[in-house]
Length: 126
Image (tube, rainbow, N blue to C red; front, side):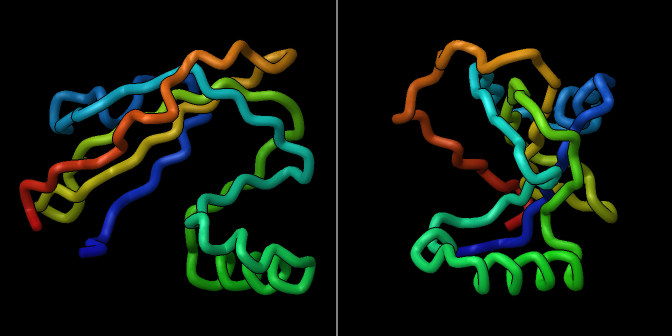
């Protein structure tokens, strides 16, 4: 099933939401690098890549802006990314949450991750 979930882009340098005492951290994985070239970062499923044309991307941008989908405007350049997963308190119940902690860097970092790791979140609510 595909249940609701929260996406957090953390650029503040503050303590991640999923590391706070009222959250339930289930995994924390670092070692990822990302190069931003168009001042925008969007999170979408791999199926979008099946028809990744200029027309489709523009429609996707409009849709994301209209429906407040996971997207942020961000300065171009390299970022190191840490992915946290778990549950955060949302309107008096715990919701599965992915938090992306981004830190601007001067260049691409070394790839230090296992592509076979699972990013599954066990929900206590659903």
